[in-house]
Length: 187
Image 1: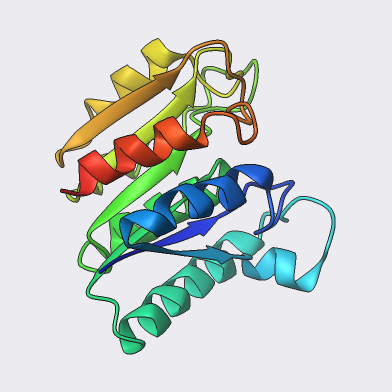
Image 2 (image 1 turned 180 degrees about the vertical axis):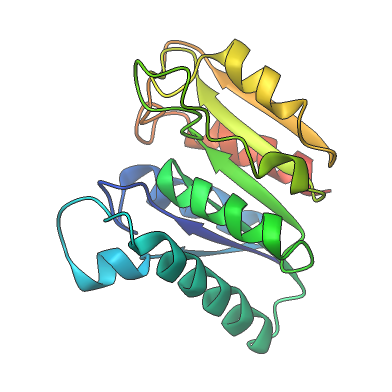
C-alpha cells in the first residue's frame, strides 16, 4: 500500500481544506494519507514558522516517515503545500532513500515579487520522482519558472498546472484532479 505523508504551508495546519480533500479523494484508491502538522505548528497554533524552525520541521517529517514505515507502510511518499513541500524536498535532497517520491503543491520557488531569490539550490540533489502541482496565478513562481526549475532535478518530474489558481490551488476544488494525477504518477 502507498502511504502519502502530507503537510501544510506556513499559514496552515493539517486540517487545510486541500489536504482534507486530497485525503478523501485518495483513500478509496488504497492510498493511505497521513495529514501531518509540522513541529512549528504543533508548538504554535497560529503564525508562520520562524527561520530556526526549518531543521526541526525536517526532523519531524523524518520521524513521521519512520513511524509510517514502522507501522507497515511499504511505499512512503512525502509532500506538502508551499512551506511544507519545500521542507519535504530539502529533507529528501539530503536523504534520497527516505521516501519513494514527492508531491509538491504550490512549491514556493521565490518570495512574491522577488524572482532573484530562488529556492532551488537543493533541487539538483533530488533523484526520486517529483510531481509538482502549481497554479497559473501563483505569486511564488510562474508556471514557466517552475518548468525551468524542474530541469534542475535529475529524477523524474511532472507538472500538473492548475489554470486560474493561485497559491492555495483553489482550496479543495481541484482535489479530484490532483488525486488522479498522483495516482497515475505513483504507478
